Image (cartoon, rainbow, N blue to C red; front, side, top):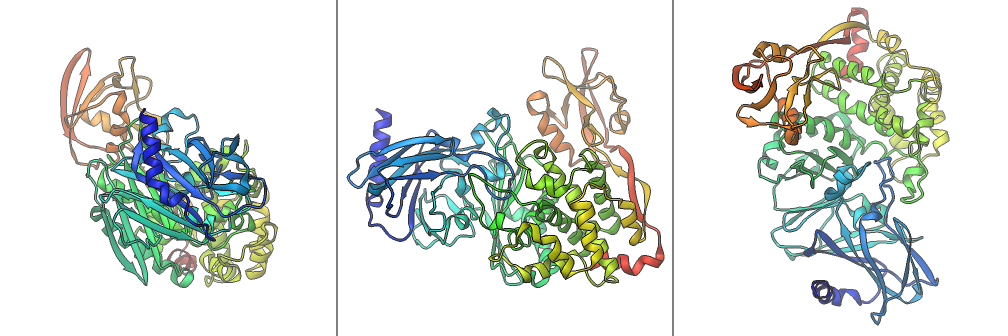
Length: 611
């Protein structure tokens, strides 16, 4: 009975839309007002087809994710109808495609969309949250368009007209332009499917700020489940960062509007678990935990959003044909992840030292971290080979190295350019030259890029790319640092209270879900300063009780600890509880690092780090 009532209501809601006169656009209606069981109804009206059969696809993979996620698995109740309401035969070919028989009579298709956030904990390899979807009726709908809207075979270049019906209490954060004045109906136009996929929309209670940077309108929109964080809270650091980014880039970008859509997760079982961000040409989707301390949230936003923003250079401007003509269901991957992700990650760090957001030592610490983390990957795997085969093992397992060695490749390329040009040119000027040579609508052939870079620069640059990017030789980082007067040293950096190094936890969980200090590892300064011993059970910190169920909250909140902060820890020792009060003493860890030592290279080093 409920299903029938729902179907009837849907028919009444969509009736006038469903049999509208055909136009040159593919028309899509998304109903966010009548959400049932966390499912959203979608109706699609295509153009006329001349063939008897046609296939409708929901993407298997989207640009920027480098993983096959099969978004079609979240589609239910797919049906096709002629203009008299008669149901046509539909055969589901796989997770992401539906073959429709009688396509010459096809008037509309309908289906329901389930969201990915509710299903993340159930999946062995869950969809990365910023590329996923959320459906929380009357509160938040993260409408990553590729999760709701598909394309007909061979029709991906046709224009789309999307109508979204929504509660008046929800507002659309997006870089798309709404052409409908109603506060319950939004209408968006897109020239082709890839452009539509490139524009996410977040519906939530309005919480946003705007500011303008060198002619670019910036939108910061935040969804915080408890209201703990607002757009106003994070805007100052975001504005400072984005002004620095625009100054760093100079004339390389002419985007008129840029939107940052920030979803803060409760990190519960039915909420987003995969934290990070995903780039688009004129926007970024960000998913981070709401319980993160504000200063830590700001620092994280600074790093992840700056990375995504720099993607406007590559691959969104400079890219190969594999990117320009991306196939969402049978993708062919480009061999230049070293540029798309590596150069972008390098810029996200380099601009901060160039624009004075961090100092030289802070930059070198970040680089040292990347060198250390890159050691966990096969250093002889050619980066171009890994990139081209990134969807298959063993290359898939090496993808994370694009943010480590990929950035280091960009750094060494920058250094080589500075040396060859006596400080006059760097990787940023190279990207500017490539933008002029190609640009967003003129892709390059994958196999031609290295030759083009060599022609635009110097033979030594071409040799570097051939040897260390296409070849299997490990990069001798000390050799490249020496060109800038930088040498290896031992440095100390702040550690984490509960984690040794990068991944070794100092705490464990027993069978009753209690958190305890491990007995097989020596406690660090954080514990010893407070008199906490091996085997002690951590009951509460600063009056917040902790166990296995909220251990992630403990780890996240501890990221905001600072030396000298007052702290109260309730522990259970030999079955008896006691409270320890004192001051936070963060551990320090020694690691290989780098420092400037050669004064004769000061001018060249200044050109490298200060532009």
